[in-house]
Structure formats: C-alpha cells, structure tokens
Length: 126
Image 1 (spheres, rainbow, N blue to C red):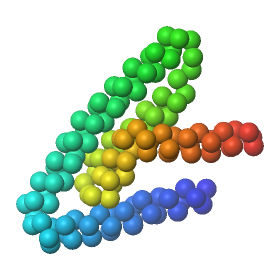
Image 2: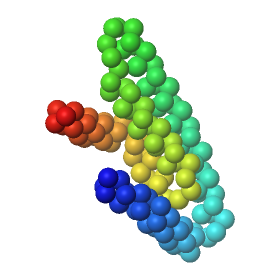
Image 3: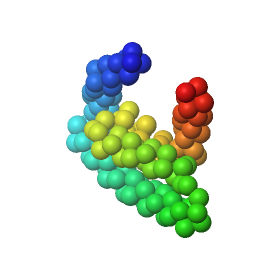
C-alpha cells in the first residue's frame, strides 16, 4: 500500500513541477509560440501513433484468439499503449517522452517483459 501512495505523490506533485520547468526552459530557448506548437504537434503525432499501434495489437490479439490461444502479451501491450496514449495527451515534454517510449515496440517489449515477470512472481507467491 505504501508503494502505491509514494507513486501517487510523485505522480501528482513531482510530475507537474517537472513538466512546468521543462516547458518554461523550452519556451526560453525556442519561444512561447514554438513551444506551444511543439506540444500540439507531439500530441497529434502521439495520437496517430497510439491509433496505429493499438489497431496492430488488436489485429494480433484477434489472430491469437482465432488460433485458439490466449492473447496475454497482446493484452499487456494494449494496456501499455493505453497508458502511452494518456501520457501523450498530457501536456508536457517528460510525459510525451515516456509515452513515445511506450509506443515504440522495442521499448514496449522490454517494459512488457518486466511487467510479466513481476506479475508472474506475485502469482507464484500467492
């Protein structure tokens, strides 16, 4: 329970502070309009990538189901793409970077494998 509480404190306090700092720094060097345009551009590109990756995952999950297999990896990938979409729609450069990392298959696969191992360990422990 304390891990969840620490995560929530970081998510709701530290992340906005970091995001505001990064936006101000980028605006200082690139200008306010360029910074706003960059934030909008990254969000639009992220939404397009979320749609593309999500449809691909859905197609692979349907293929797994048609073959009579449980689409476990595709479900985890789908959840990671959902999280990436939420991060991409959140204004800011740090959340956009994390969201983009989750959208690219190599980094998403690495995160997926860590999550699967972690949850498998929890299931084995009871």
